[in-house]
Image (tube, rainbow over the protein chains, first blue to last red):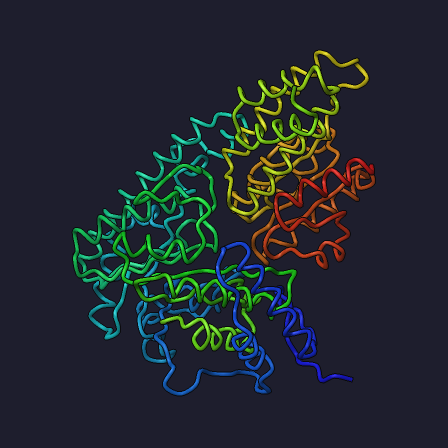
Length: 355
Length: 216
């Protein structure tokens, strides 16, 4: 009987696969990415190398010496003090303590201050509190500290915001009204993000993290790119991380363009040049994990997408690695065996500049 | 005179163009050569299937799907006026769709609702963060054939099971099919909670809804 290796499904379930099956799954995952993104598949050598990483005997693995990359941490300190049943370990701590723990104990190369609501719009009424927290953190920390939140354009639609929900409008065949609603929301998203970051830059922030751009589709991407462009113009030295929500920009609007390129339907390697053009310092590409597929299938697919993004990008790519992305299973606490294997593959084969 | 194959291609292309006037023009042209039911099935419906495929591949987008559906409806209306009463297009079925309580994710569910509607289902999208009881009440109110349950978080996934349990308590489980979806859902999860089906994406949701409701 062939040796079988302990791996996982995309939902985290433990599975055992032979080397032949692992190679087969890696090839299928890579082919899927290549087909969707119209990009090259991984070469035979690259597939073999990913398989080798997956079959390593240790519970955790690491990159080869000299290949270490910077690690940027998002979602603020919510993983420490958050206790909402999804993310967070519920350790009572202030945001300052949380940020300093990431800097001094967890080895984060940069850190982000974020609010519990973690979207830009709800930061507006608590901006003074956020500015004060930023100042205090900056006075106590050495690593670059950014302010971060999600553009989350959905908050501008009913029932959370002033503009009618485009999903409802489209179902009523009110296409023009849906387009208008998305365009108005994008304008407000841009305006709010700029206003918030003007305040936080005045309070000493080293930069901004746009976390999960495009979560509400191409309008969200459009509004975020314009915010990035305006912030770069106003603050020439600001560090801007543009992290995506998913692998493909959902075409909720379908007609929005940036720099002459239609935003809907763009894959990571097509998104990266636009983030750079807008003025981002770092691009955060994403590949979603399919919970019904094996970890080799997901990793083969994710590495293929990320390799193409790294090649196309003129700015560093810090790949999004975590629960349900980057070939990692979708579990509240992602299993360490899968996290370290996927991360090693991203650095050594996709060539990402950071995580 | 155009051959049947050419007319079918023209109908399909017209639907993919998402332009109502082009669809109506193609329907008028095909009317004298093909039976209305054939125009609908081989031309218009085939075009909508292709629109679904292009949507899944990121080549066509949500507004385009709705425009294509609107154009198809206009074409079908023209044809139905000429069809015997028994042959007219029947409603595909009634579906209540929503995201379970505690989960505010809206877009994936909305895309599924839109695609189901464009495929001819009567869809009642009851929104996101929907209390368990509301799914059952709405299903009773509209005499639904199916309930669609979306969840994007592992923590809200159990809400799908709770709706199924409530349907059983209410004695409705045998007549209401249940479809589950969302990133953390899998076929194994659907089997575990005794859902009737799991759909990985919007196109699959349409295909499986057709299969289940037709079987029913």
